[in-house]
Image (cartoon, rainbow, N blue to C red):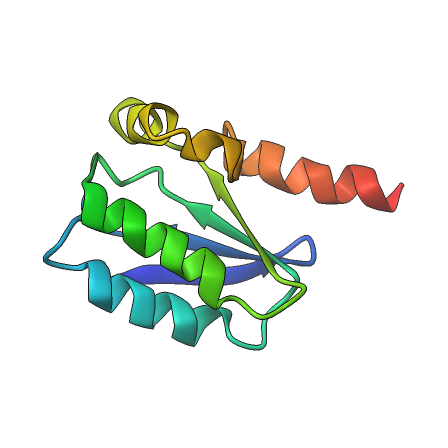
Length: 115
């Protein structure tokens, strides 16, 4: 599972470098996210801009990542492709997660809070 991470505006920006998060990669996705996010900043922004397919296992993996984060850490999402956004809307998970249109919007939130 390819995940690229960087600290950006006091948050951890994690970009999924795969087109699919499905049952075939869900466990590896969770494990890699745990490795990347452990001990990190309080905000973790998961960039799903390259993900074009997310099934129920993939959605479950994203929810599991949210739950495995340390107390005080929160998972936010950005750059959802239309098909992935539809999965979050249909399952009403768009009400559970903070979802930003793009990475710039996600990190502008951090900038606004510091001003």
